[in-house]
Image (cartoon, rainbow, N blue to C red):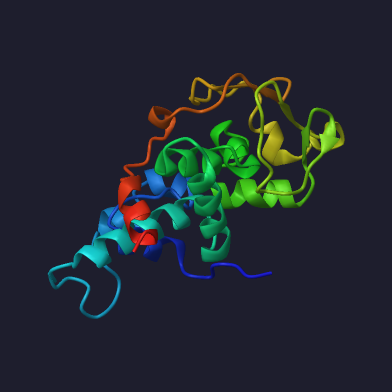
Length: 206
């Protein structure tokens, strides 16, 4: 299975913003983006004029890297959003937001989307009582997301006990029972990343 093997800190520096790909490290003094916020490479510090195409491309790459999806899968999300009756850009972002690995991240079960994706892949999460190990699984309103009962004694889950987690209003998660719920569908304002989705639509519309 294909995967992105680029260094996570380099991805943040390349996109010019924090994508929070390494969890707690991103909010600590060890964050590479804070220490050296320039494009990686020998000529990273030099300023170059970016073309319209380049601006659109960077916006697409930023979203792909933030959610941890590759080009083929990202294009499928775009195509599906384009076929819907709603606005293409926001619809595409909301489909990405409803991915199970992102929901696990938003609930605080994983410290980053990549760790959350690994948790899902390893079969540690259930949806409505059934094990789901597909990170791209789309959650629905009313879905109950929980850590498998026989895995709750793992140290990583024990550390969640009693922790207060800030999460979007469309989700809830009880850190004592390790059970959460999808209260409603996400809205565009629930996405905290600075994304200009119209640039992605313009790129694919060329």
